[in-house]
Image 1 (tube, helix red, strand yellow):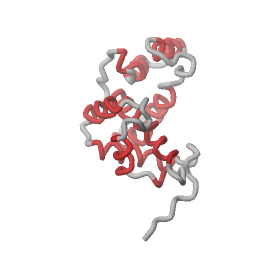
Image 2: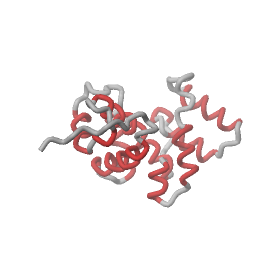
Image 3: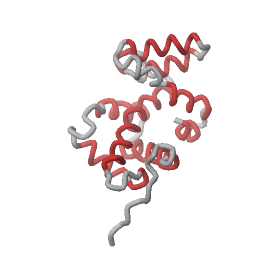
Image 4: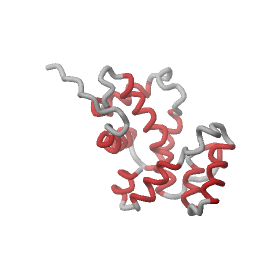
Length: 163
């Protein structure tokens, strides 16, 4: 979220906080309607701005809340894809995020059995809402995640290329 905020001229700290907070309630309330409603109430109690709570709530399609802001659209678009890309990295022999490419993500997206819980429909919808191609969105999420691969535990020694 911070990477996308910087690219779009938005508040990096606010977008970063929203990215961190959007699923904070998921472990306790993993199902709709509790997630994200319960989290929204907790955030309200702590004085979080309604615009941010609305963006967080809108990342769950079942809420029916329209994604009207760049923040809401971006959160929705990158949410499923971040987890998917992490899964792609974890099945690689190296388990290294920098070894993941746009092409390898696209290939895994076609395999409906791989990370089956990830909604390909949400990824497609989020891509369209941002007005990007799928390759552009995957590339931007890779560009955002790869510099923080160490913090994600995905920064081992990259695979050697053959040739």
